[in-house]
Amino acid sequence: MAPRIAVLGCGYWGSNHVRTLKALGALHAVSDVNAARAEGFAIEHDCLAVEPDDLFARDDIDAIVMALPPQHHADLAIKAVEAGKDVLVEKPIALSVADAERAVEAAREHQRIFMVGHVLRFHPAFEQLKQLVGSGELGDVKYIHSHRLGLGKFHTENDALWDLAPHDLSMILAITGAAPEEVRGEGAALLDHLSDFAHLHMRFPGGIRGHLFTSRLNPYRERRLTVVGTRAMAVFDDVEPWSRKLAVYRHAVWQDSGQWAFTTNEPTYVPVAEGMPLTRELQHFLHCIETREAPRTDGEEAIGVLKILTAGTVTHD
Image 1: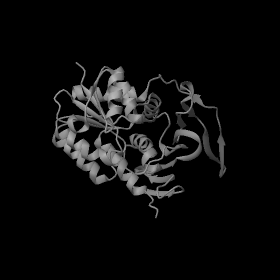
Image 2: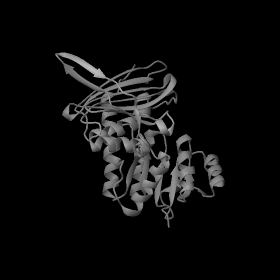
Image 3: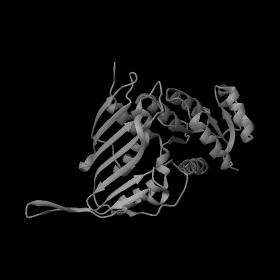
Image 4: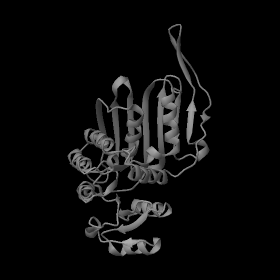
């Protein structure tokens, strides 16, 4: 029998979890502070509607997916693992490193699965990109930069950096395999006291440099991760169709008689098997519940992401 999962928080992203878990045959209950909203999802998807306060004590729920405002994640994740539930917590898992560490330590103490919703780690194009890096196809990685730009969404508690950057930081950490030695942040608040766009500059062990740009006040949408190596460069562009999501550029740069020379080449598009990242993420969560295997995106990774966000946050009066 598939694990019985409850979704706590039926807003925009929580509703995607509800639909996906239903398709996977694992949705058992939904819960939301808006009881009418939860009841509507329960009727639509033929599952239970449970009050949030009653969710944790139920023996018929094995795990909880939490898609809440991030200020509530840590305390409710702790409550869940103390009640014997495995959890998948959406990003960011907390608004402070200390709260994240409390939640991760509670899951470890109670031997519960603690997974984080860094969904792009399960994107087939990123998995293929990571394989290219691991095989040496790009040579030695020297520089990674990501752009995640668009209009909205606007939150009252977390800025563009905290809302948009966790996915990219998760991918960057997966490629570098190490925490940055140096983080410097820049940002500007145009609407209120929270940064509407932000830059992160990072230096990793081995001389790898990283740069991240996020904006929620941009007229066009951009979702691009670029990895520059000594042999080739690769671009994961999630706005492109599947046949063009992962491109490899085999440009060459060298010195000739004391002068720099270079050649450019047309990109080679790497075949990528189509698959919905959220479906693959939730399949992985179910697998971890059943096997007790540590998740690919675990609590320690989430803490690493929060440390970078904290170090790079710019505060505004």
